[in-house]
Image (cartoon, rainbow over all chains, first blue to last red; front, side, top):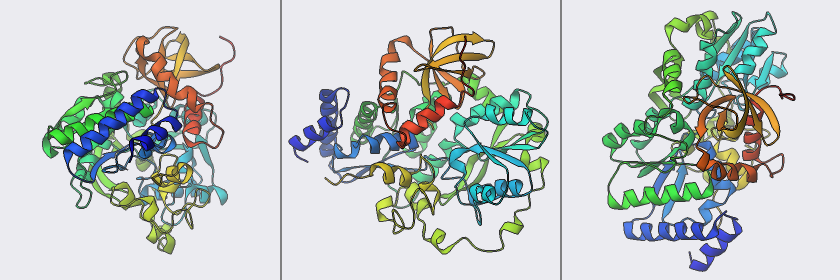
Length: 377
Length: 96
């Protein structure tokens, strides 16, 4: 890319500080040249990062040699079919299911929660776990909170479970834990990730030191970055510098929100309520320790022990042929992109999504559908 | 959804704070934050819980992104997420 093109793109983006954006873009270009390889692939694992990258057109100022890909950073997208099926069965059986809005249209094996709702089931959209508890307090019906999200969001679920919810309230946890899936993606053949950009707000809870073991094991650097366009560019500069120097370590580029140890109070509540267990992440792999499930002492609020959830009856037919063409899993593993999917923007659009990545506002396909993913340079 | 949203504390009532998000006041729970907060402090709110006190020196930098997003129209994904995070504080609080 010519210097002029870089400058124009930076100006168009309305960076708060165009001169700094320009300097960061130049530094990235230089670092990539010095690394002497192409492409250099780095991965982020956060829907909000992808939203900011796509919305502000950051890929237009990135060097051609640098490939910034979104990994499994959308918790709704990695919710596996049987997890959705559990919520669908509960709703069909007359239990009131409360869930975050993005979960409604996520396809299960045969139906989504929106399908169940359309057929008369009680499904409520909530913005917070607290709202789900309030719903339960206002009724005598059984209310199940179908909870999704990474550790940052699981903390809120843990807090309401510890706050003595009413007896007709329980939780169906589809919460996921990010650090173990980074291990899986780092080792996937064909992914060739040379560095990770970690999400600032998840690290607010866990602290940046949690990534040290990962770096030691895989010799891949991790940089914690914020969400402002300049934060992301600065994070990428540091990451490519570590790649160039072959000095894998963890660097915190978001000190205004992230400390080494993180939020200990939040961690204490998270691990008091949840334990990690292995499970499938939709389309990606079985992820050891990647799922957060309630500990036995909270079985009284665990929908999986409170109800007998018979999934068999949903499994009388296979998912639709279109579903089988969906490459969400490959996209989240970083080995394909929405632009190589034959369904993207045709059969698969936000109003009638085929895969979960087109459903959630944090899904790569949904984000690229709104903002365009890879600007034509 | 991981973006959270910053707001300024107006009042602290035990484990709940009334927080001002650009003129909209909502309740934010203080169960998981690990620092003492008082009226005037800024916190980062995620799904109805304060998860971090934002250091005073960093407030301007933190608010800038959100102020820009909130000028976006209804359909914008990032703006919708931010508005959803504000909505997570439950019912709007009018009198403090």
